[in-house]
Length: 229
Image 1 (tube, rainbow, N blue to C red):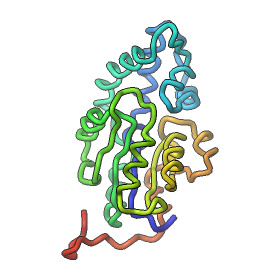
Image 2 (tube, rainbow, N blue to C red):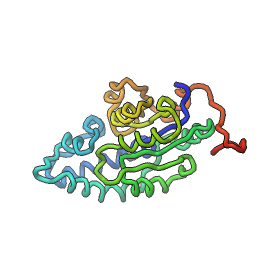
Image 3 (cartoon, one colour):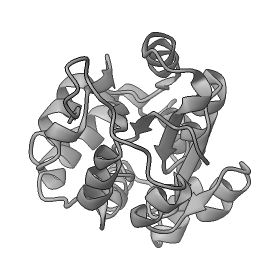
Image 4 (cartoon, rainbow, N blue to C red):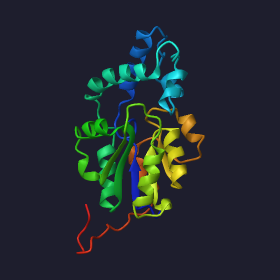
């Protein structure tokens, strides 16, 4: 996989290791609303999908009893205090640094509310690796496809030069809609089998990513000849 000049990162589950928090939180919302809890992380990962409303149906919620908007608000009120204690995925900072050293542009793109994304990302030593942080306009995580396609059209690189990195089938679908390649990470929210079924490369550790991109590319230069960081 060569010729990549822009890397578009997913946030939740890909760079932020919030899987355990999301698993515990959805189980609390399930039991609070009279539904059976998910038995384990494997069941959680098999159920997870986008749009999140479909995932909520997968785990047993009945929107005729409790509307999705109410459930989403319950989830977020529990998730955010707990997520403040999440770590980044193993190797996240080192991988971001390695790609930056190659002169690649990096962008953070999430189906999270823009304000939430900015607040979460600010807790970690990663701001200097990203040109932009792109979130959506509400908490309902329907899709980030339009946001992604608008970015790719305006980023100045050909779609084949823009690589999406994510932990869900939706990340693959978004990349496909933009005409871009994708690499999927198996340590996040969705089951590895579902990721592999897309046909995209699947990595077990973020540290594998630089190797997939081939030989190190020369650092990009600004007009004055200085290295862009």
